[in-house]
Every structure is written in structure tokens, then in C-alpha cells.
Length: 79
Image (cartoon, rainbow, N blue to C red; front, side, top):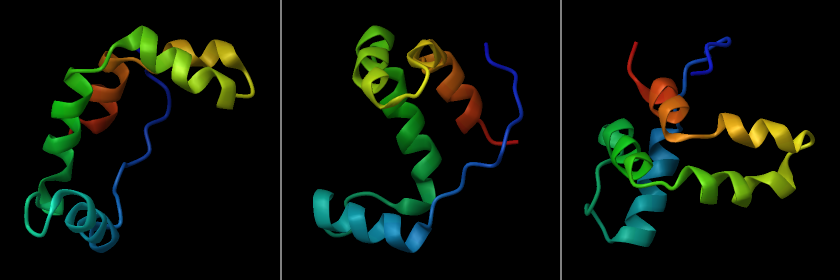
């Protein structure tokens, strides 16, 4: 697991709620529960598919290996 410097991950909740309302329907999802929603999504990711999707956008494609469920869940875990 990647144990580098961890900056807090916090979205703009108002903007997130507006996006959720537009894409999921009004009040279908609550932005205040964003962390749990994202953790649930991450659990269903395929690490190989995720890495291949992001490789073209990385300056150092080898860093795609750091994008996996374990590391994403560690970043999202509340402190």
C-alpha cells in the first residue's frame, strides 16, 4: 500500500450535491455521505481496467499501478 504524504480529500459539497441532483435525480443521493458513496463505488473497481484507463493521462505511466482499490480506500478512510 502507498504510504506517502496524505492530503485531506474533501469535495466542494454544494457543487457535488448539484451534480448528483442533475445526474441521479433530486435528493437521490446525499453529498454529505460522499465518502461512503465513493468507497462503495471503489469496491467494485477492476484494478487492471482502472490502471489502463488512466495510463494515457499520466506523465509517468508506471504510476498507474498506484491506482488500485486498496490505495483508494486508504485515501478515502476518515482520519
